[in-house]
Length: 220
Image 1: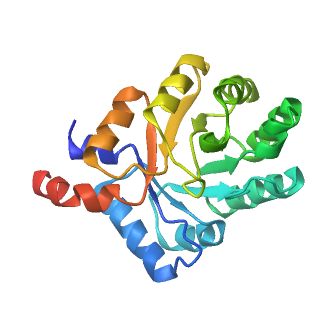
Image 2 (image 1 turned 120 degrees about the vertical axis):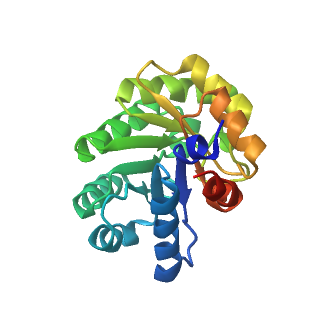
């Protein structure tokens, strides 16, 4: 697998609380240079990026990172993000609803946010580190039924990130129209290739460009 092929699957990510505009601009420049799938940034930077950069796919996060915002707030966040120029939305489920077995609440929330996306891509973060295998399997069915575009492993802010076992479980249980995004702790070239080979169409990471840019630049 070439560096270019890997980078085309990367959501080049910067979601730190302290992220500065200068750091965000560096992220965007790298994404354009190395042709990553998107930049994944805090909602407050969507409009400034949209105003300054053309041809850049902007992904942002909703209900991030804890997921327990009220649904109306998440829906409004999604609407405003799309209006500001986001092409992709990564939302966090309310894990408490899963633990309370309020699965219909989770389903309806995803449906509402998908509608608010107005045809843009919706990825659903289920934060696998906090779920049992049965809960992960149930979430595969819910994400599929809700019509979301991707199921995503992690925020990167939980107790653990993506695992190959979770990607393999997703692949077994999601519907044919749902793709997989792995995020959190994917830091080596071997990791990147392993997750892609396991079935991840996207990988959320802050380190792929730095890791591959030397080789990628030499190969272009």
